View 1 (cartoon, rainbow, N blue to C red):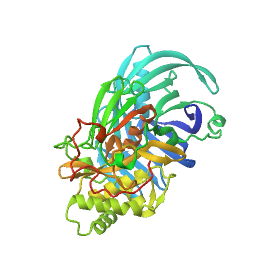
View 2 (spheres, rainbow, N blue to C red):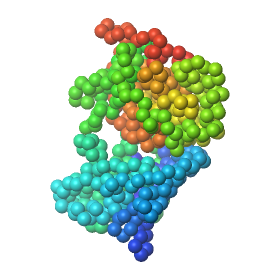
View 3 (tube, helix red, strand yellow):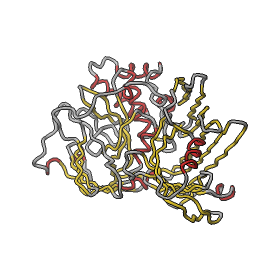
View 4 (tube, helix red, strand yellow):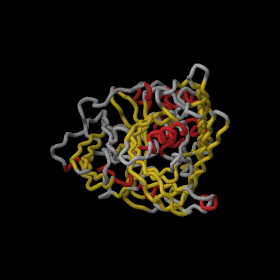
Length: 476
């Protein structure tokens, strides 16, 4: 299959299906090439699922390269039905048991279910799809649209059009697929980082044709309605933002950001205004535990964290020291690094905002401070030839004095130009999911707190900007 973003070829997908005795092995290899401010970013993902002829899961394998190191997932079904899963990220391996989710299916099981349900227009049903990379299950609503004649690179085919959407998303986030009578996908269209990604079946020569440059970061930039001068950035700001298209609310409510839907896709976002008490839930397991990307239990990470904070007397002081140290420690800005783990970043000292956020989160958890990675956008005066824009960004929030407080080692400070779209445990899938809305955002207005007479002033001690050293850093 050829892979395109908004009509420009950026990669290829090869799918092999091997049937041997009572076992079906499906292998998928995706090669993907983008640029970020003229810096090439090549990614490869390999996924293999092993199932019985009836679609019963037997094993899975996934390998991805989003940085200088490969990330591996291997799962094998045991005699008791549980799966032994080995995750290797950043050169460190973890083994755990996975109890297979009820009703979850991989590739062959999904194909068999599709054929069993049939292709009559108007047919609706739900599936539970297992993703080997994330080791998560998505409940998907499926609607059969009908039969259509589709133009593919090698000619026209009559195919069945299905629309799949995440359950509970009100049909606003969907993937369109066109399949043959056997349920094999021949064409697919899905949103990706603000683009429309299309995959279309073709011959090998077509799939191997040269790729075209698509600047991911430039396309994801959001124009600012005004210059965000320094005096404005260190005070609370109210934004009016339009979300184009039929999309659910993409913004999150945090202790530092308050979201007010105004209707018709318009939102009022207040960043940095004081609130008397925390409005968020406290930390959960995902905010404290190590995981394959945030290796906070690593002796190297623990030792580094303790060395940095020294005799700091409080968690707030510890976080400030960690933030300040990392701002200089990650000394080489690597736009060719797609998404690296905490350990890899610690060793290479390379990366951009995601590497800063993941490593800072790992260091915090290594000290017993609950922390999470926030994804969103941030203002920069100039980036990649563009001026006065908001660009994709990631930073860290730590649980300090019973509230979530942000720390940004990439920008050297957290300020009121940070607009949050999602929070997560530090794995890349949360980041990429949050970024999918960027092509739909338009910032209509940004108003400083001094112009809002009805707004309370921020508190001095636990203001999101208190104690965050100044300085200019890059976004994204």
